[in-house]
Length: 474
Picture 1 (cartoon, rainbow, N blue to C red):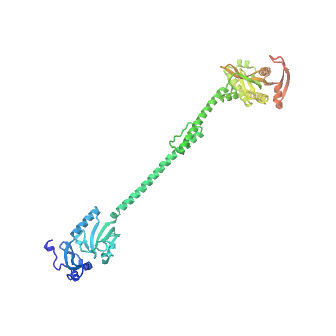
Picture 2: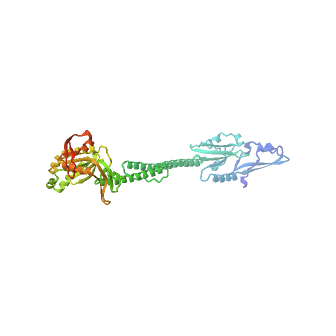
Picture 3: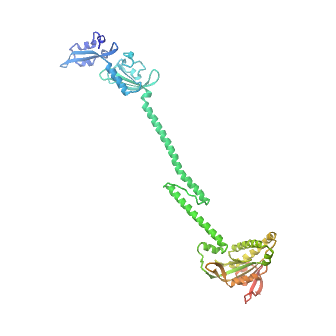
């Protein structure tokens, strides 16, 4: 240093001189010097501190080396330490002594000035004795502007000095705040993702359920073409596959029923209903031939049909006959009979065929009475619509006949063959309008449910033996 920077005598603190007496005492006496004996001084613009080294020989102090060392290297090191540990911040790193005077400060004017009450709150309560011990403290406090600050003070070993670092609270806790933000953002993100995932999963689970509900609704309305597409392999997928299979089976069954219904409708126009059912169920033997069976045959014929055809147009006659035969057929079916065939203006019906019946004669007589009642009620309307009335005559006989398929392999007819058919047809030709003629055998089989007029023995065309005939009393 320059000559003007060197302090004038005395250069050795008086306390050192009094304690050592140049050769009296030991080296430990230097360590017990009072703090004020090492107080720094300002020499020009440079702060210097006394540096005293004892000279010992045989464990006795024989002298001292003393000088005033500049504190600039320490200040430079602290500045480098501050720039390394606290880059891009306005953290204040200072060095103070036991009297809480600044030894190092960014403001040179404050060197050797006391820190003041707002410098570092916890440090203001520290006493000089604590500075001679291992002193260290870290705390939050408010500065003179009321801002939150964080400070740390650590005593330097062997000297009554302390390094103090002060930094704004928002800077000190920036990482913690960032962590809070990160944690809050993470929690929020997880919550949002969980919510979205829940909504997605709920939608994914509910969508096939909605499809299944819709499909069940379609099935309840007999709409069997609906299908549900579920790509899942869990229980919903199994249920969807089962419902699709059920819908397919129901659709096939519905198609089969419609086909059978169409077959029944078509065949029903030509064959008796029981035969149609057996054909649809593949139970009817379609081979030519038949079997003997006890039946009752009924013939119902329109009386005076020839004059009727001469008086009316053919289209009117056909329409009238169709209406008549439609109702007569319903009456026959209602009494468990079978429409064998329509012969011009005549209908032939079988009772007790193809399925055997114990009451075939009674059913035939009851059907005949209903036929007459219908024609009677319809005549007024036919009179108004067609300008004519219809009267029918009915003949009924019971006996054995061969029931089966008659004809050829290309064209066959289900009918009855036997003398019972011939006698019933002869009785119908013998009957008068609105008259029901039956044989004695029919009367016996039908029981006492009906009243009869005994017409005695009658000769029938083609029969050598007369037949006992009865009229069913209306």
